[in-house]
Length: 346
Image (cartoon, rainbow, N blue to C red; front, side, top):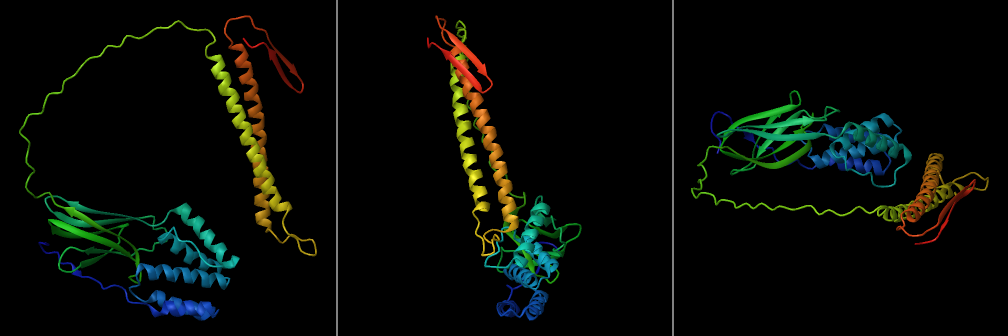
């Protein structure tokens, strides 16, 4: 399939198991944290870890450093982990010194965006190169790209350094099926995508149809607009119904937010206390958040009550004003405490 002077190197075999990772996890479970940190560093320096091993290593390093109260190192490990796998969720029961740097790293990755990869190929009569563009590598984790051709008697691969955020592997082929892996400083696999298929344009042209197209018949339809005499006030009553209905919905929303506000405040007022009278059922941070949420929900409830009442009154006024032309008596009275509407239905 391949032509010319480009020779692709033999494929790298799948990464072998890294016993240092298993050993580091066991040391963490035994709370031998210093030994665990050294063992995981040795596992990280082992060349050729696959993507699953890289992610497991970063997770264990974040937990170990967090448990040792080394927050900056824990945060760095979690940042790298979430940059490579933004969907990762921390499992297990971990203390705040582990969870705090994890969620700080999650916020940082959400702000800076995870690692992104754009694969492609240069094509003409033949496929002349495979390309990859690396984006959002804020931590500068990616060092090389490994292009792997999967079509043929055995896989062939070529590693190309990343320069200015891109890598390119020249070749010449009529068709290629390939995938790409991004590698770190120890040739570990950080990200992989594929397979992709690209073909050159040097092939027999498709047959051209010689049957002339069937003419399309067109028809002209003239529609004469229908005129109707305007009816005075015909829209007022439907508008009154709509306003009143919207007012009832707004009042219902106000009731819902009022209940939510009471529930949020009850989390604080109903929290468990110890024998000394100190609150133990909720943290200070969660209490402040619940109180702020209760105030916000109460404000929304009050606004919706006022809006709903106004809409109901407006709907009633429109209903009476939009009555058909017939003897009718409608009166509207205002007082410091409300609005009174009275009349005779036509």
